Image (cartoon, rainbow over all chains, first blue to last red; front, side):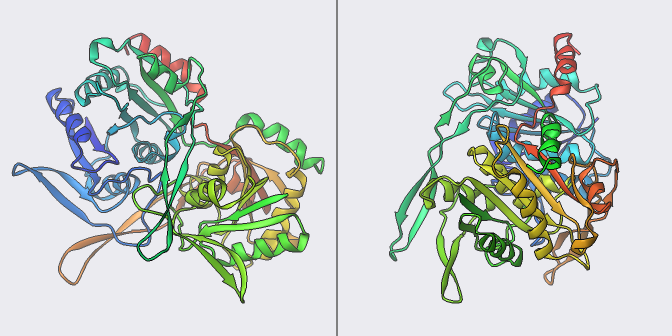
Length: 255
Length: 255
């Protein structure tokens, strides 16, 4: 089995290193790492078209570790599949991200966008993220997410669909199990911090990440709060199918 | 009515200027422009967290035209709603983009991401794009999209849902009408162009935008090809709801 590992925190990030280590220990297959050279969080599904991409071999204690790319997570997946890898990967694993990717976070997440890109290119894919917290452990996240992966790795996902996994910030024994969940509806309540630079010009920092919580038991962020690993099937079809009929009425009857 | 206009091609782009002009001619309401200072195409839903944002007043022939932001389309919408505008806009219009945003393009589009951000912040929103082609005309696109908008502007869209409009590259009389469509499944077949720089180092350009076409009559890219304006309701819920049951089976029965 050919496994491509990527992320958005960058090729040197602890979460990616931990995931690779666990995959190698399990002897899950041939692992290739292609990840951003620099942190690319909150990049959404950006791709790089206006400047060229560089690929650097990255070494760890003298040993080849993987390919670092001067681009976004989506760039990494495209470049890996189209140029770097000899064979198309059987699975693309993205993570382990520091910080949960649930609810509205999914829209901004580079970790998720790497898995989206893999699905677009017809590869099976799973994004893995770890909730921030005192007891957050990448080892725990790797163990739980790869245990989950063992249950699905030989299955065929529906077209354009990939998996989004979040692991709570709990010691392993306190995690209650795995729950299939839907994307929640919690939102950031952003604030901008307005400042003045030494030359008297104003600038803004995006600040504040308080969430407006909307909780139903099957929402991914609620499932995490309840102590479960959340597993959500995502897809690349943004159509609101349930609204097509009503919209047709609006337009045909001239509003 | 308060209308926020933004885009991803930048505040100086012809498509945005044309849209603003038509809105003002129609006396549709109070129009405020908040758009990126630089082109931000293919930015997906990126937001800027690692450096501060600047806001510049932009003038046109000595008259105030709008606010230019040193960030992405999603940044512009956040900053406009949270800081720049006194009142929350009734509608956010994003465009007119040069180039269609249908099928897989939707995933990468900054134009669409501005409308997504508006929906996240509970504003009604519409993304407008114009297919490239010899007969492509921003004026035609403005007329058709604003005619469409007249039919929906007083309605209430479902939560988290916004409209994605594409106008074909045809002279106005040749456009057959408006069709409600779903996001199509056509894909790019990207190629990377590998080159060597003057210092002997390799680099890659993302190149080639041939599409693998998958055409059904109700797909947005097909509707455009057939000579209609496409209207697609999109939403921010990426969950593949139809696959939840099967996934639950996979996980509960241990694969």
